[in-house]
Length: 402
Ligand SMILES: Cc1cc2nc3c(=O)[nH]c(=O)nc-3n(C[C@H](O)[C@H](O)[C@H](O)COP(=O)(O)OP(=O)(O)OC[C@H]3O[C@@H](n4cnc5c(N)ncnc54)[C@H](O)[C@@H]3O)c2cc1C
Image (cartoon, rainbow, N blue to C red; front, side):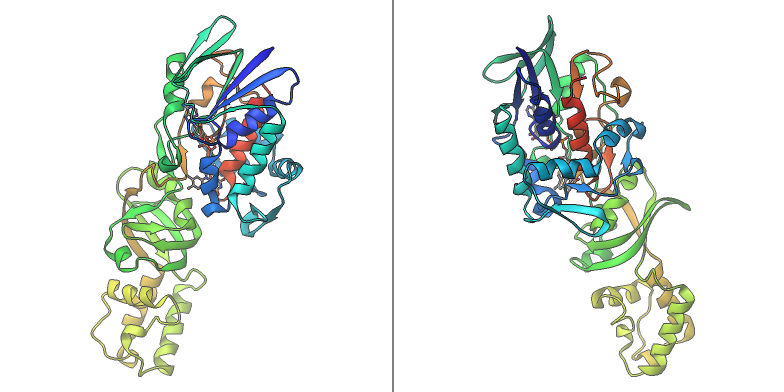
């Protein structure tokens, strides 16, 4: 009987095992380092699991050769992923931006349906069973665990990346495959908080705002987006900052973040609005000029940042001061020191070099019978369900064992 071992019971490994187990007469063993499968999945989407994105397209994926992801993503697009989960009994709902969550709003629903399916298909689950080393042997592979050496005709490695260290993100996959000749690119944390000069963010800790963001190196714009940001002790978090974090992580030194807190107003419109405010609310304390327009603490901080203080009331502010206030709302700059590390990151940018794998099958070009899927490969997605979509699609592709 053909034996297949899957190393890693995360999103991609579970899909790979389920797919491999569709072939009758095949023994499929799934090894998971942690006590139970799907531990990281439980933490995804703030515990709700944003399991896919209906708008997922090749442009949402990155790596040295992002096109590598196309065959797997095309063969198993979001609609197919949803059909698959619905067939397992999971009911889903789509939210803004094409993000899909379980209707239960509980990530454990996703893990549960996968676990039940693994059981139903006869996959042998081994929890708390890390693979320590691998070697090739005649006709297959030997996988060494703490208690025994297992033998497989075919091997699927789905150990994930280094991100989310507290949830089991490890570098095992790269280390297990290095002796077989597989090399990795440099690794960077992605979908992670930006670390900036802390002075202003610290004063704004906990404040959320909708903003347009640009990440600059000198005058070059490396990335831009719009959405919610949240200020933290050390910098800027929130979905919008996550979206540009890959560029911040890989962009080197000398970066700055420019925030526009009123992106729907032009400078001229905003100046006119503030002049009108001076006319209609002249008795208002000058420190409250931006109150009602942006978050109260943010408004006061922006005025301080713009050097606007000392006047008692709004009525005493001159046109130049109002123009300055308008400009700081639209051009608030923070020097970027980098990003938080792998502990806090949602995904690893970089991974095993994709040139060493066939994109049509995810089989190694160096070691026949070896397949790799998920975040372990040098493919990472944007924020919004794209990484799990890659995990499902690549897991299914690897599990076909073509
Ligand atoms: C906090 C957080 C929130 C996230 N939210 C989302 C989201 O909402 N939507 C989204 O699309 N993506 C999200 N992601 C990213 C997504 O979870 C990952 O990209 C995805 O889980 C990768 O799947 P994977 O199978 O490659 O790796 P993983 O899911 O990490 O699974 C790898 C598994 O391999 C096991 N393993 C490692 N080494 C060994 C070994 N030596 N032997 C045996 N087992 C081993 C690990 O314990 C782990 O269970 C989030 C990530 C984090 C950290």
